[in-house]
Length: 229
Image (cartoon, rainbow, N blue to C red; front, side):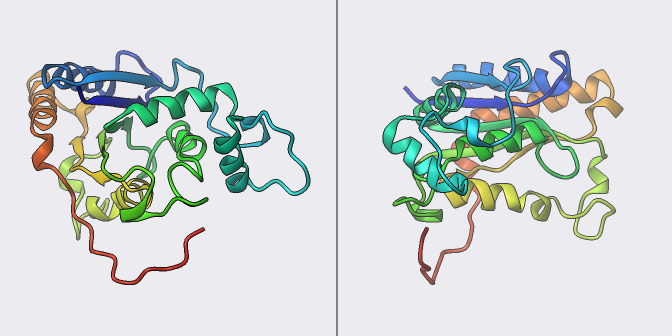
């Protein structure tokens, strides 16, 4: 049975963002998935990667990446990091659920990436990157809301091209670690809409999570291999 992990990052439990996350959970379950949700605000998740991420002794100049490799090898991640990493390793599908803030992830979610997409597991430290990344064979996608209307996004629009905006996440986080990125699900400006338009947006969430096999995003093939970490 396939398993999904949804990492949710919105401070309001009654937000539209939370509503579409719950819709995704329900739809995935009807598709035969088991689903876990990490609700970062409810968990009081700390986004700051630091020395407290490790239970082994730290000496000298602190280098987070090599310490992550060591923690993976020795089983010395702090309990909160270890728990999230176990969830991630169980998942065939990873979903980030969030409001777009400053054209990117909320800080609490970016901090989850910093701490959980660890060197030695997701990439580097004997693990490759991109098509050789630690999570190759798994899928990941974004489910998010915006404050701006849809017409404000585009190659020549005020807020810019959404494909360009999301590249650092889909390519720089997901594919970098081996995930096959799936087409994002975006609900544009739900707070500016009507009950009818929000219902249509939730229906779009149901449709998207019912048709995951047709949503893969293709990045260019790597033609030149470089030295890995």
